[in-house]
Image (cartoon, rainbow, N blue to C red; front, side, top):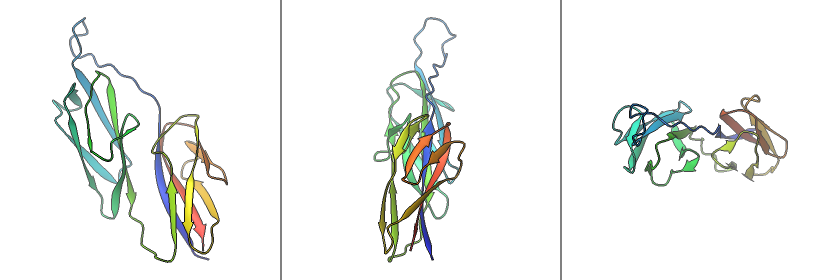
Length: 177
């Protein structure tokens, strides 16, 4: 039997709040935000309008560009868990730590006879659960689920994912046909 796979990488986010002290740590108003980014190493991102490495002025729009490895595509782009995939920009409004997360996935080979679609949120909080939504186009509708790191998350036979620790986890839906 031939198996068909679809992977979805889901970042599990630990809430981080970091107020940078950029004005001698006195009572002056802090006027910059700290910008960090993370990827799953299948592509890179660059950020326009930073004032220096990792620092941005408040209320100034930042534009994000993505460069993928061959045969990969940008699957999701978010800032502190908020999806910005449709516009590739965001504006820091508070002097906090902003984490830009980019997830790049391998472009699946096209097989017109069989297709598996896996949808789920792009991030989840530690300790939370989410139900995967899987659609199978093909002769057999049964699906098995797997995670690449059971220390970070677990998935049951029905596709219910539980986040255990912060990090990136790859969830695979496999259909047999």
